[in-house]
Image 1 (cartoon, helix red, strand yellow):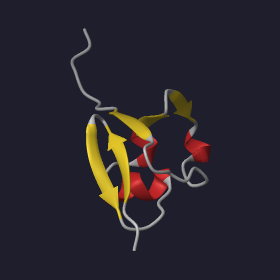
Image 2 (tube, rainbow, N blue to C red):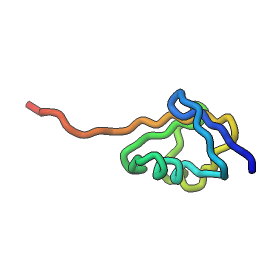
Image 3 (cartoon, helix red, strand yellow):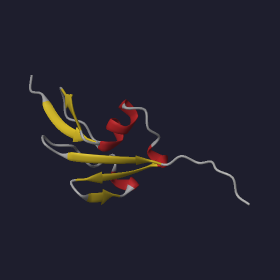
Length: 72
């Protein structure tokens, strides 16, 4: 069995099998509708999360949108 390592928001994480962006988001507990994902310095459209398979050494940055605040 081969271990795949990726860089996720500055931390190295490992997977024992191939994973796509949608599965990654679900595994770490993020709602795909409420995040923006950058893969190797390129923004991935939400429509591409399921089709985008991660590879050894990929750099993934996830920005999670949080609502709230007071409007005056």
